[in-house]
Image (cartoon, rainbow, N blue to C red; front, side, top):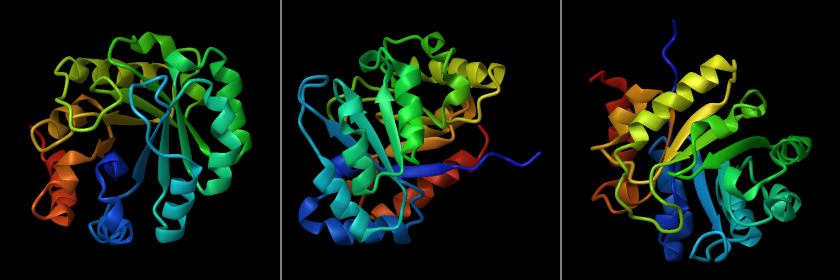
Length: 224
């Protein structure tokens, strides 16, 4: 059986925007698989970040897939403009999307991969009815809204439960983790069943960010 692939997705929440082109080029050279773009509206979470213009700028600077995480209320209002700006994946919060099936369908109609995020207090079971329709499930291993937070240890068990749910529903969705991902936490998440990892502070604050991407990937190749 072929081992699942590892995806490393540097988070632009930690990027130096004065050196955006340089840092995106570094991510590419370091072998990053995706770039993770956190969109916050200051309502769903207590912070305000990027809009479609930043996505459009990143699209011009890199060929890497743009994994856009919508931490917003009424996420459907952003689908068309973000698709046009160059997003490849749109991920919306279960807590902000009462019409999940409709919204996932709309994302796919736009030609994008569709993902759903759950916060630390949201049970994995809440995604059972849509799991088979998803391209990505994102487990938040911190409370969303800020970068640089500490990993919530209980997230490891939650990742394992989500992996089981995806297997039970025959979902082919990637299983992503975001929050506190670093050398100390990534292997446990990998062993629990995650395959895609968002890392911001761990990469961009490293002495050698390019090497850090490789180091994180290597830890998923070593079995505990």
